[in-house]
Image 1 (cartoon, rainbow, N blue to C red):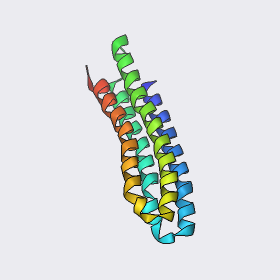
Image 2 (image 1 turned 90 degrees about the vertical axis):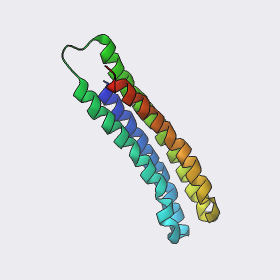
Image 3 (image 1 turned 90 degrees about the horizontal axis):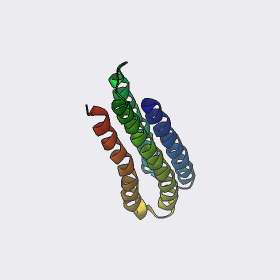
Length: 140
């Protein structure tokens, strides 16, 4: 269940973040095509969510044994839920910020640095979940 949670929730966050920020990227590309390479950054950042889930899911799968204690089972479940749900939240945040930020950047290019800073704050949510999951999954 932990590996499944990690993959499903992180992939949902990545898919939502990519789709939502791509809407802003396309609308900005229509208005100012020269900004399209800057506008793709939120979509790339959103896609990283799925990689976090994949890494933790592989680690959890490698730890599964037939004679596991309930404590170890719950640790693996907790690790999968930690990275999965934080990845989902980060993906939603990146999608919303990416869409709005890229559209605003199309009208005022000086907003690029501010948009990147907010995207980094949203990205950190997923990294926190990844760190907690790695601690839970690698403990004996």
